Image (cartoon, rainbow, N blue to C red; front, side, top):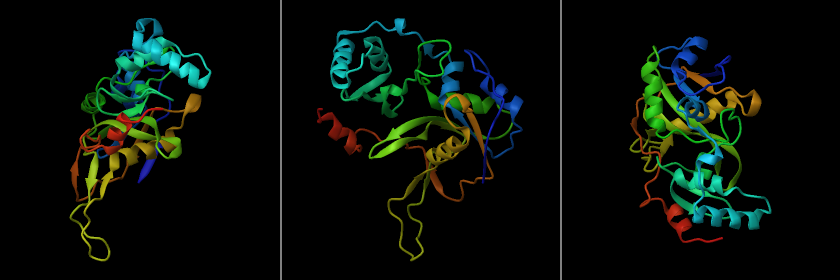
Length: 250
């Protein structure tokens, strides 16, 4: 398997054609997996906003005051309002905002970015990353899969890693259940989140910060002869951690 970053991409602006920008810099081949950072997808989809676009509600002001008391740093209630607007549910309001986005991803601050946003104060995640991945894939000339990625923190561990927000052209998971281990025992629970693993591999070569590149290509990787499915985000009924957080207070 080969993973390489796509250099030379320009600063993406609203309405830019991401597929055209990628093909201008990369000779894609059938079977490639193209991993695209959600930041440029959001920029192309016009998801950059100024804080002034978010009039803070009473709840947003209350959240900002509470977080100020905990951290000692000033918190803008307009940012809290943006998080509320982008969230289906707030699982935690303190000591930070842990949210469920409208498309099911659980992350801090609804994934809103405040860095590398030349056209606004905030960059919101794409409305529908799966639809974004599909649109990019359908515009590329090669028969590839597309994964829209973002960096995310992890419970119980320091540091961040890339995860998949949306994908098209491949299943999210490789299902090993029913297959056998080396001793002949049947696997009963092993489901491999390949879109997350490919996103993590891509992030190793794209980097972060000012020197980062927003697109990577995975080549000569095969899904293999396995069943697959797209159940990446747990539903509330089977997500016991989410259920526990709903009953927990800081």
